[in-house]
Structures are given as C-alpha cells and as structure tokens.
Amino acid sequence: MQTPVPDYLDEVRETCAHEGDDGEVASYIPELADADPSLFGVALCTIDGTVYASGDAEHRFTIQSISKPFAYALALADRGLDTVLEHVGVEPSGDAFNEISLEQSGRPRNPMINIGAITTHALVGDADTTPADRVRRIREGLSAFAGRELEVDDAVRRSELDTASRNMALAYLVHAQGKLEGEPHDAVEGYIEQCSLLVDVRDLAVMAMTLASGGRNPVTDEQVVPAWVCRQVLAVMATCGMYDAAGDWMSTVGIPAKSGVAGGVLGALPGQVGIGAFSPKLDRFGNSVRAVRTCERLSRDMGLHLMQAPEVASHVLYGVVEPDDDGDGVREVQLQGTMHFAAAEVALRELERVPDDGAPVVVDLSRVASTNDVGRRMLREGIRRLQRDGHDVRVSDPDRLLDSRDRAEVATDALPADEEGTADTATERADTERPEEEGRATEQAHERSGTDRAGTD
Ligand code: GLN
Image (tube, rainbow, N blue to C red; front, side, top):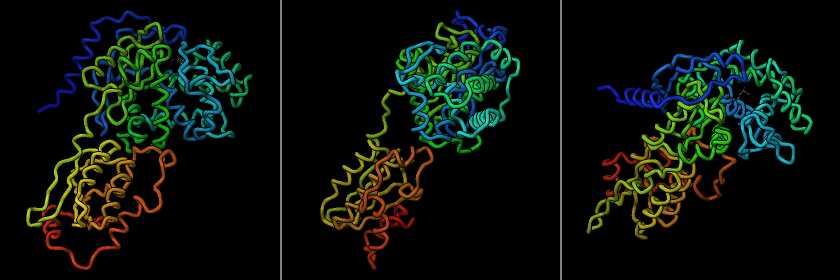
C-alpha cells in the first residue's frame, strides 16, 4: 500500500491554487518583482525526517524574513537569553514588518519585524565577531537547520542593498538608542545577505521541523541549537511571526509561523510537523495568499491547531493486575503512552490507590512511549514514596525512560530541580535496598512481564 499523504497534499495544493491568488508580488525589492506568480509549492516534514512535497517543490526562492527566527535562534544560542532581551523585546507590535517599532527603552519590540531582526543579526557570534564572520555563521547555521548548504542569491542581495534606505534608517535609529551593536551599515548589509539565502519548500519544512523537534534536525540528526532556544523562538513566532496578522493567524491556523516577502511561509508545530509553502503573491500584510490558505487547510484538516487539547492523559493507565483473594500474585500497575505532567498525575493517583500493606508492587513502563523531565520526576517520586511506605517496588523499564533525558527537553535551568531525597535517589535506593530473597509471587511477575528491579535494567 502507498501512504495517502502525498495524494492529500496534491489535493490541498490544487484546491488552494484554484481558489485564486488575489495578491501582489512584492516589488519594493526590484529583483523580486520578476517572480512567476503561478509558482506554488508545499512540503511537510515529519518528526522522523520524512519529507512530502507537492507542486513547485524544487523551485528556489529567497528566504527573506523567514530567516529572522533562525538568526534569533543563533543569537540566543551565542549570547544567551538575557543579553538578547537587553537588545530586542518579545512583544507583538501590531505593526507592518518595516515599521519603526520601538519600546520606550529604545529596544525594538520583537525580532520578527525588520527593526528587531537587524538588531538581532548584529548579536550573532560574540562581541568580537567581524561582519563577514557573522554572515558566515548565519549561513552555516541556517544550512544546519536545512540540512544542506544554502547559497546566496546575489542578484536579489544587490537589488535589496541598492534600495535599502528604510532598513538603513531603522538600523541608525536603533544605534542612536544604544541597542545596536557595531556599525548600522554592516548590520543592514549582513541582514540583507541573510535574507537572500535561497531555499525551497522542502528546506523550509525541514528547518521548521528542526525548530519543532527541540533543535535536532530530523534528517541529519544534528543538534543545531539547544532545546530552550527553540521554545523561545517558537513562542515569539506564535505571537509576532505573521506581523499585524499574527492574532488572526494564531486563532485560525494556530501554528507558530513566519512569512517572507518572496512568498514563503514556514510553520512549525512542536513535536508534530514542519510545513513549508511558497507562492509569490502577497496579501496586504506581506504574507503569501496561497501559502496562508494552504496552512489554514492543513491546520483544519489535520487538527494541527496548537490550542487543540490533546487526548492523551486519560489513557495513561493500560491496566492494573490485582493479587487474587488468597493474596497470590503481585499487584502490577501498567502504564502506557506519553508521560508528561497530566499523564503522570493520573499515574500517581493510581499508585496512591495501592493498599498500604507493604506488599510488592510492579510498575510496568514497558508500554510507555516517552516521558519528559517532569513526567520522569513525578514517577520516580511516586516510586520513592511507595518504597518509603514499605513496598518492594520493581520497575519494568526496558527503554530506561526513568534515567534518560529526551533530547527535545527544555534546558534544566528552566525546570524545578530535583529535591534532595526525592526522585533522583529513588532508583538508587531501590537498588541498594534489594532484599536477599525474592518473593515467589514477585518472581512470577518478573517472568511474566520481563520485570526488572528499579535501577537495574
Ligand atoms: N529583506 C526584506 C526586508 O528587509 C524582508 C522582509 C520580509 O520578508 N517581510 O524588507
């Protein structure tokens, strides 16, 4: 059988193409005015790096403003959140992409509009990085997000540089406010080169999925930036990515996104999918008409809205095996699915129901697909408390979920630390306090479900 996803994507593209494209190709960068308005491509990248594409998927166009979230990611990775926040805010501006949009402090409102993006560009690298090295770092960084070497469209770069008065003015203004590092002219020149990198919709889909996977490129497996950076970038994309249409976009499509004046749109749904779409005609906000429509369709059809409640927590309990009336057999709590806060809370309530008789308990995690840091800590704490109450707890954890960290996690410093005597010590204690003799019932459970002691498998 053949997966129906490509057929579906073709159908979406055709429908969106037939609905017309009542917009205008960008012309304020003269070279962009020559774009063929009939071009239309769309691509999806999944969590395992599978890319589906339809239409003009091979056509390359300049990334333009879609480079902004990635330059922001590199600045965050290079300088840290505090330094970047000193220079650029995170509030939606409600203004057009090229507006003078400064806070009272002189800080540009966010990194997705030009004034904030030029400021952000100048933060990539460190204080001693030369303009040329900064551009190199950005080209290499964006290439790592895309999983291939990106090149600059020199004609578009020169064309934009020749008509860059407005961006120059924005840069000098931020410089006068003391928020722009280095020379304004260098920042604009570098920013324009950054905007002139050539991509196709596949690149955008992979770049989006890298952001949506906590910074790990699903095709090359490279960890491009730390996970906390992606959380920050996606949050700012969700609130500011579509300029003055951001609120409307968030309520109808509900996917963190970024558009560019060449006609590209990138959407990144955390943990699920990366979307790239392209067609040159733009609406009055500077967003591609067909690409926006495509994202609306995909979101609606595939339930991709960020605010749509997932239906996982209540299914966390796979089953509970009770000892029989004679007390033979061992109590076994079998969990499944994804262990995050809400699911772990349900699991902990089931552990709470274990009678206070000190009998052995098996916690079976063999059907749990994954756990985040919070889910892991909560489960460890539940196990520790059962042990404290005198239960001999065995944990079946063939994938070692309780002692590994998954890569998509946010930085540890953003999470509450393990407290002394809580989760972290639970598995060690189970290990060291192993009784000499194993009970018969527990042995049977061990054989039945491949159970191992906590911390030993
Ligand atoms: N390079 C373009 C500019 O600065 C990017 C704008 C955009 O894509 N919205 O005007």
